[in-house]
Length: 217
Image (cartoon, one colour):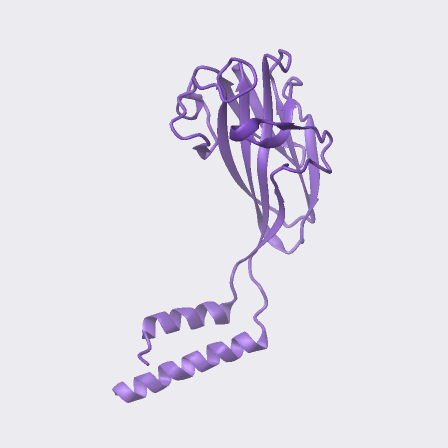
């Protein structure tokens, strides 16, 4: 069996030094409802939205729905991903994301506008619906809707994290609303202990490299 020396050395180095370890703290799609939120309301949004956390009205932009999660305390970073649904007739109004009671994101949205490209400040990573130009009604009232994917990474060694949301929309839910879905929180531990068996694997791999070198000398 031929041994790729560069690959073997790289694998051995990775094994001997330990590796990043991502632990899923939560993965919530709300298909069976919600628990632990200050407001556990969920709505069946049909084939496009499916069931999600919401629909909610605005509350002047303050944090109006939140949930606290336990972390390992061994992590150096936490990554939060979520889908935000802009529903019906938003008019230059804001969706806000809070972490540990601090507002970390505030993005402006408007109906009949492709906000991913045209909002003055946009922190979302992607549009959810392919080809969405801001003029498609995906459900509920007759106004167009849009969806966005957010990903946020923060540095923290805390043992808990509070995630919250708010909006500045002021009309009733039949006119405009918001929701979130597909929340994923990952606890990123910087290194993991290397067990004895893995040390043996690494040592054996280095020995094979030494044999290969002697044969080619």
